[in-house]
Length: 172
Picture (tube, rainbow, N blue to C red):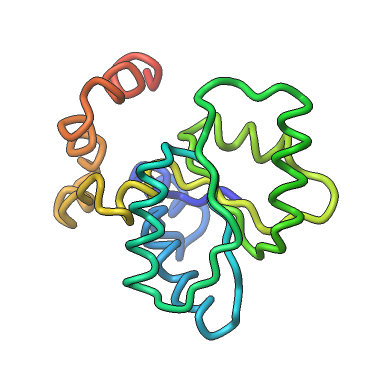
């Protein structure tokens, strides 16, 4: 699943779908986690670094006591081999998770989700940097910056080494 997490996407989308609005990864995750507590849905998390996943787990246990975490594993920060993709797909499926949150950044997460499809799989959702926001590792942009389509600038200021190339070279 891909959602309109950027302000420009929601602006363009509103031209064709009147009720379309922006849905950030952290906001979507918060909403799904709240519903999960009532429904008993479980979650698998793939991506990021182990220390940030540990921080995310601690944060989720505090914010959503009883949330079922079916598994968490960090990214290997390189393309996966075909056998690694099959193994990851099997681990996610075997976990019994209802949702698999993939945090690799676009377009890597969308490509990986496509490559993992097939067989019994949970709903896979690419959420980019949402793990770090929910873990408290990276602060969320103020609402006024989000509303003015300046979240990218806020994120660039927070993580210039990681995001400089993506925002100022790759995206243009």
